[in-house]
Image 1 (tube, rainbow, N blue to C red):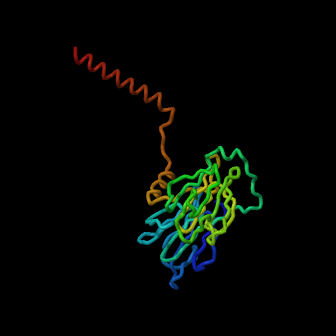
Image 2 (cartoon, rainbow, N blue to C red):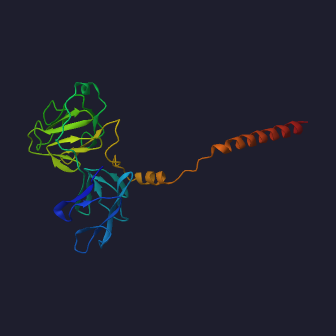
Image 3 (cartoon, rainbow, N blue to C red):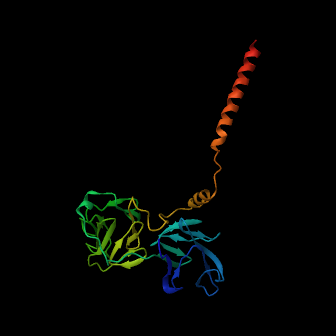
Length: 267
């Protein structure tokens, strides 16, 4: 994901752009959060950006850390649009998204291709996939494809429809805005890997099978992701193909010796 940055609730800190490396989060003596290598205080957590994406690492002994309401004890892989709750503070991971300067025209062929989907990653629709072969209505209306029973939402909160390999999001007059990669919007053009959230709980990822996501942080990992990440970094010593003929000859020699012993032993 391009242009990742941290946005701090209550403006405890100015927005901080994320680059490859480690970004420490500490609790300063003033009680406010401090960010960066020069910040002095008790380490709470750190954000680590590498080629795989953005990782949240929780310091030993720190409790009460959540990503999108899910507790994290050691490590989690986070994406643009995720909300991190840390020591009573809210940190929103934001990224840029494409506006509506150049919206691709509608193509009737898109209606016959169900491969581009919105996949639920939070809220009531977690784990479900919604195809975009037809316009997808979001709201409280009984005919809404993504129905949200919340008094803050209008019957027709927003509509999503496919435009080529992008997804067009248009607000429908609701008082509440949608969130795209952590930024409040009414209209946007979504690409693979973008996260759109309706309210604080209902989160969806845009999945385009033939494209890589715009960022490598493709999912929220639980604490077990730490072991997976470590194993990915450890080189595996695979047997060389040159050694196989010698191993085969050794096995045949041992088999011949065993046969000879059995034969002469029986005599």
